[in-house]
Image (cartoon, rainbow, N blue to C red; front, side, top):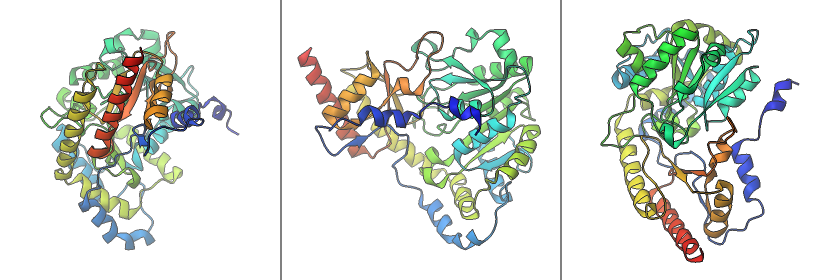
Length: 399
């Protein structure tokens, strides 16, 4: 067996199940705010396209995807980020961001180089770490904190670390913080990549879940476009329909950017055997070509965030993040104990922040936080808010 398998740590939700296993919640029904799985309705335009193309399930799909899908993605990138991407050489579909990120890291890491490193935010989406380990690379954790506005402190990274870095993974808007990197920060990181010869992969799957009255978050390809970097050298952006379009089960996303990376990565994917089915591609074309359902989605999150923040603000320092559907809540204490007691008392499941991070520089930057995913419909989120308020009032009376 691959010896690197032994380096993998339990997935956060496996640890969460263990944390809850001996608890019988006092309130029902249970409310799950732990998993970032959208519960809003899928767009009819996509589901109808999926159903209407089911006859094509009898055909093998191409790894590259259809010209129609790559064209729809390229048009969306141009309209959204003003990034003119060649649909024939600079775009490749993937089966959601998880599959895309994992396979991309396998293809990029050169394990024959001395001390290959993959730098990533901490806390983080655990696929970043697992994929790096299985590729034979050492994860380098860039801690986030309130002082760094929920994003890594890139200035604190020394030159030797950058020199050994083969790949820098960004997550903007961030999971779990929901905070975004500015376009100027992205430009600065591109300059670092040129200086130290590493690739940047920017996971931007939450980029469309921003407040309706706010500017859209910046993206890596947008930064390239503003720099006149029309070949997107060293830069790759990763997007998905899971969050944007409430289609997590469709498993549809894409990677776009530097053609000199996309070309060998396409060869890898051909052997990997992960071509997207043709019905999924038809549904994806419909979703990428439509913005109306995305605007409806944003409005629904606006309403939930407004309610949730207002009700919990007397008890927590809470605010809506730049984007995403998460609240990264400081519970001022042991996050695992808070999550256990909240579940026992209210039947609400949240994810301890320490499960999403690793100890680095002597601290676990997720400690003392829980991640709340406002993915359910408004009524269920409102019920959750009421239960949390009652929970906090009870604890204030007892203290």
